[in-house]
Image: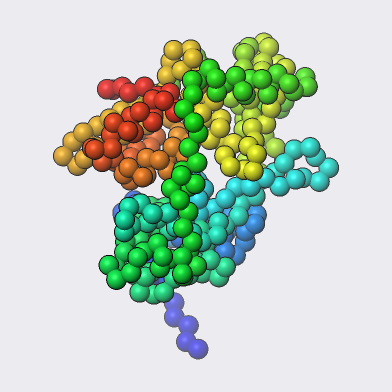
Length: 359
């Protein structure tokens, strides 16, 4: 057997080819697609495991191709988040022996597809041994757009039936989106505040951070503060011995925790961060300082720009009407079809209680 020493660029190109994605070069969207494929490959090998463990495997695999480890770690973290958002990976609770609280592990979702129209679909989940266990002729038609794998029909067979026959059963759009019902922010909050009120009194919580309701809704990172002398009910995060900080809601009195509730959902149907972000949106709406988004129209299309995180189900809903986009001066953005804009605006204003702004 002959062993050849390849320069990093050639090795990078070969790895991309083995993952069925194009060499990303300097293209940001292709880079996301490449990193996502590496994470999918890592998930085949090491899941179920904690998120940090999965990301560490991907970082280790790519460290020779990135200018610095911190930039790489951030790219892997963001790509993992997108795979969780769209449903390639699942974050699930597992009991911890000797503790009343659960931990979270990442599992690969089983192969399935969601139709986006008569002859186009999103490929989701992983096979047992291959990322996308489909015939080579079909794989050649899979387009990697960021974290998404999109497949167009070939006109020779009905796409959904063909995929189901090849181990990728269909998931209906409603089941994939898992949208909550429309309700007022007050009604939504009342459910969670009642759950919080039913908790036993809490002691001191080391490392607790909360989202300040009085902070600017235009700078999400800057909203996170230490409790100091704050009083009221807040979205919060608290550290745990292993893994990412836990999402919770907390009642404070002069900066001291009175009650605390870790955020969970029955059957892991909603991610804790998704629930927490929606709680914050409701709270901001009730105090008259709604979180905002921009609608930008130019020669390139119609774009929605967001300054705060969106729950994964909201991102999936926007994907149905368009695609992720790279835009300046925002946390995330989506292109949308002009004919879908009225429906999208209704969704953002009535399910997330957001407000459109022009600046």
